[in-house]
Image 1 (cartoon, rainbow, N blue to C red):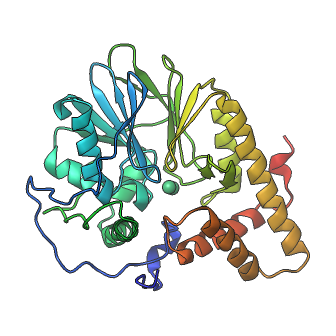
Image 2: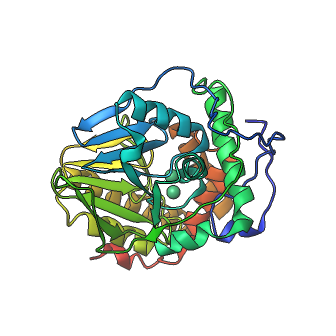
Length: 343
Ligand SMILES: [Zn+2]
Ligand SMILES: [Zn+2]
C-alpha cells in the first residue's frame, strides 16, 4: 500500500478517517458516459422477491422494491457503475427508484451519491439530520473524494474494476429529506421501512427495519463483522455506551435477516448475531482495560489491534485501522468502570 500518503488533517475529530490519498489529476466530465468498466458483471443477490444486494461483498448496497424502489447505503464511486449494471440486470427501471437512504455518512458509504445526483436527479436523498449537516460541509469534500479514490485504487489493484471512476462534473450532496427515530418510508405493496437511530459507530447512524419480510438494515452498528470467520472488530468510533445501547435497541426487533454495510447479509436468528456483537464488544473493551491497567502503552495496543484488523480485511489502509484502534482505546477509557456491561 505504498501509494498512500499519510498526512495530518484538522477534521480528524469530525470523521475518524485520518488519511489522505494522492490526488487524481484528471477531473473528467462523465456526462452520461460513466465509461469506467467493471472487470466482470457482478450479479445482484436476490434475497427476497423485494430485496436485493447490490455493489460488492466488501461494499454492499441494497435495493428494496415495493411499488417504488429505495436504495439503501450510499455506495462508493467505484461501485456506482456496478450498481447501475446490477439494477439493469434485474430489469428494474431506474425511474421506479424514488429514494436513496444512508445508514451513515462515513466517507466509505457515500461515494456513489454525487454520481446518482448528477445522473439520476429524480432519486431523493434521505439521511439523519446529523448526516445532512455533515454532507453540507464543503470543507469535508476533499476528504470524501480522497477516501473514495483510495477505495477505488484498492479495488483496481485487486482487479475488481478495470479503471478508476471518472469524477462527476459537479460534486454535491443535496439532501431532500431528513429521517429520525420512528419515521416510516412506505414503498407500497406492504413494504414499509421504519427508522431506528443507532449512534455509537457514528452520531448520524440509523438502522432500518421492514416488518413484512423482517429485514433489518444494521449498517455498521455491530462493527466490522466477517461472516466467513464469525469474527467481529467492534467499531465504537463515537461512543462505547451509545454503541452498546444501539445494539440492545436492535435486539428488541425480531429480524429474519440482517444487512451489513460491509460483507453482505446474515440470514437466520439475528438476535444471535446481536448478542455476539455485544459480547465481542465487551471482550474487546475488557481486554483494552486490562492491558492499560497492566501498564501497557496505548500505542502498542493500538498497533497490535490494527494488525488484527489487517488480518481480517484490506479495505482500508493500515494507518486508518491504527488510528481507529487508538480512537476506541480513548472511547473505552471513558467507561473504565465497565458499568455499561452490568445491565
Ligand atoms: Zn462507518
Ligand atoms: Zn463502514
